[in-house]
Length: 403
Image (tube, rainbow, N blue to C red):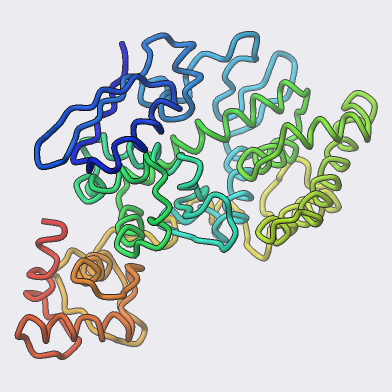
């Protein structure tokens, strides 16, 4: 069955860009006028499984295939969380989780990843990045993630994201500096549906292809899988894999440990000598892998320390950082306290202040800037400008944002 992705309320000026972006993904696009110079675009993806697999992550997931899709023609079977080819060792669920945690640390400085993190690095060709594995606006993958989330009937912030889908589809780089958009993305991190969507999305886009690539090459050690996964997320795996084999020697000649060490050294040199400042700044990734190699941690046995952060059964089972399940808005007053007040009610209050045009970051932490923004909004609405919101006021401010 063909998959149709629909975006409404697209301004006439944006129609060509959105249409072209969908067509580049292999879709057939129908443009329907809504009136008032607004249009609906319907992108129909092929119903042929092989064709869908060529569409990228959005086509794959939206077609309902997820991580259970059949492999590309001639390829190894889908390896899921690490099922091995016949006769090779099994990558356990904990080893897979540990490999992902290493890359989470590289990407967001957190073992479980920061599902709410929004980043803009000067000179980064990906532009705005978001989520546990920092998917990018410039690649189109941010749109794919948000569209996948927004189509879920349980997505709490689907309506808030709807106005941005056409712009992300069109790779609108002005979103880099759109503070309200960034705040909506941060708030989405509190939604379990978004976190689970990110897990499926990043596993399908990066982890499963990395496991498949490692098996194709003949790699079997957990640390080797982590190195390949990092390169799939960070980029240029195919190029540096081939250079390592051609210039340093094949896996059969060097052995797995020797080949991985040669690859890590070659990748470190490539990063260190890049013309891009943002890539040169990431040599720490290879330094971290080299440290694990020097410690003979090929099996990724826990606990591990990567860039000063502990990966253990305890840290792997903690709630993800920066995500709030409560308190419910209206269950308490919100004010600057010591320690600072944090939580879901604060995040949604900040989102309401952002909607009112205030320069506040919706990080769920109520500090001086949030208090000053609240005071200005209170004053504009004829309330005492105290910078403190009692429960009724929190509800009144948050209600239009979240219902």
